[in-house]
Image (cartoon, rainbow, N blue to C red):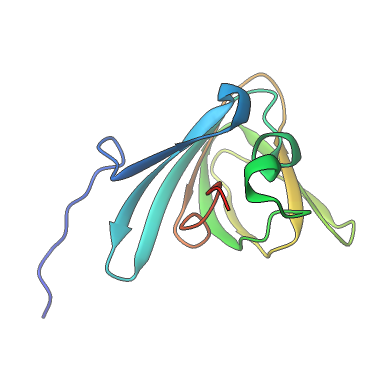
Length: 121
């Protein structure tokens, strides 16, 4: 049996900042993948603040996560759209844009899609 693991997103192993200082992603690595906490500031949008360094037409990460605070609108390449708010579980496949709705920071935990998220290519 494996031993317990304790890691803190308040002491991340890696931090990635978004373009124009519109937020950040803190990551901790686990044996079965990483867990991340993203803080998206009001005005943040994937296509403006993550697309330039990753150089893809839309977000190609699948996300499995939980919205801690704020609101995030996600629009899939096929036009399907959903707004996620504090307390929501979210499962979003690759091929989307997203942005913060309102004047509150959106804080999201993700245990699937942040390993390569916002990483320069």
